[in-house]
Amino acid sequence: MEYWQKELETISRENLEKFQLEKLQQTIRQAANSPFYKQRFKESGITPSDIRSLEDLKNIPFTTKEDLRNSYPYGMAAIPLRKCVRIHSSSGTTGNPTVVLHSAKDLDQWANQVARCMYMVGLRDTDIFQNTSGYGMFTGGLGFQYGAERLGALTVPAAAGNTKRQIKFIKDFGTTCLHIIPSYATRLAEVMYEMGIDPRKDTKLHTVCIGAEPHSEEQRRRIEELLGVKAYNCFGMSEMNGPGVAFECPEQNGLHIWEDYTIVEIIDPVTLQPVPDGQVGELVLTTINREAMPLLRYRTRDLTCILPGDCPCGRTHKRLARFKGRSDDMIILKGVNLFPIQIEKILMNFKELGSNYLITLETVGNSDEMFIDVELSELFTDDYSVLQRLTKEITRQLKDELLLTPRLKLVAKGSLPTQDGKAVRVKDLRKTI
Image 1 (cartoon, helix red, strand yellow):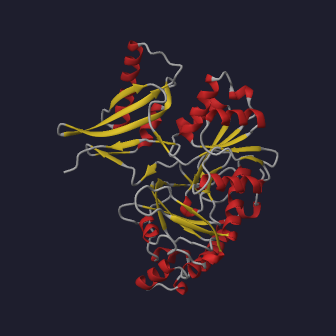
Image 2: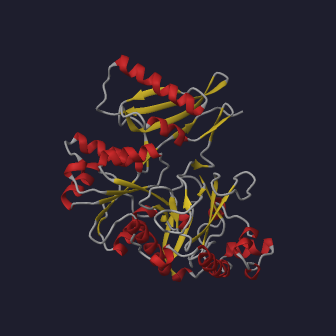
Image 3: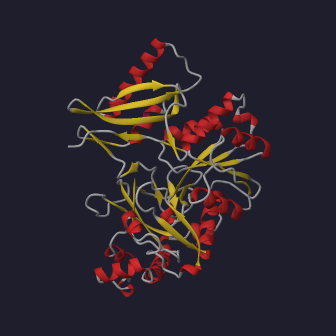
């Protein structure tokens, strides 16, 4: 087994916690320089000297996305702006976006973090890495760009969109690895096959890094089969730098979250109390290596759990289970709590279907109903009787999973909307009283 930084990746739990406490204490002192945390500590009566153990972290109030928006643009800055070298922000369309500031040291640490992830899944300086994510304010572009350069790989900063150009680059440059959104990965493969290109035989692809939107294990397996690659799940968010916060190892059994960068908590999103390993809750993260804008107990709204036990890869950092969704994306319909990922899990089992689907919630009469439009594969028949049987079988499986019966409609490929390169998954048009 090879490691990017063996001493840190295989560190003992005892030594890791000592390291975390030292870094946490430094972070608390650093955070106190920001207008936001200076006021927060004053209101809660906390001083940096009060944090004597990792357990004391729980005495610090949570930080939320709303806190970041209310502090826009520079209220979270813990160093003078002249020492900051980059801003990233969310793509929020209403109100203030969330802004994240970086120092040169922060960017250096982030590049190393991403390079560690890429090395872990077998990428080396001999690889040719093509990034299909948007650059600019979105962190997926520059985050992977600098990580791949730190790794020493030849990089192709293709950015988002223009599928035929992406395919030309893959073939002409001999691309071996892609960073790509799951829904776009299946679309890219479909276009390749339409062009008479079999990516399993006609390209040098062997690895894809997928993230930026929730996806099921079934979706991952479809990507691997279509492209002839190993697909590794990546978790990141701009508030925590961006990509590279957690990443799967070759075991593909949970995402190692780098605890020398971040302290992990899982809480019940209702009671806000910690839950045991193995129980799903909301992911809460604390940065311990950032200077420009440290974040303490940040509520991500992402739902996951810590997988118990050790990983056969030898890395000692905790593993997060595949994300179930977000606490603020949960759909409540007719008293049933469900997540879009449950629907995707069923849909991806049908090879007759494409990768894009849309869930619409509407009030019909006095009842709220769920409508699901799902794209067909272009290669599938348009025979009405066959489509009718397929619709009936998919609806049956969805009912078994969701405990309610959605209204399913099979639509032509390419007919469903996307936004900023990501598939639009849910529209809630229900009437509210």
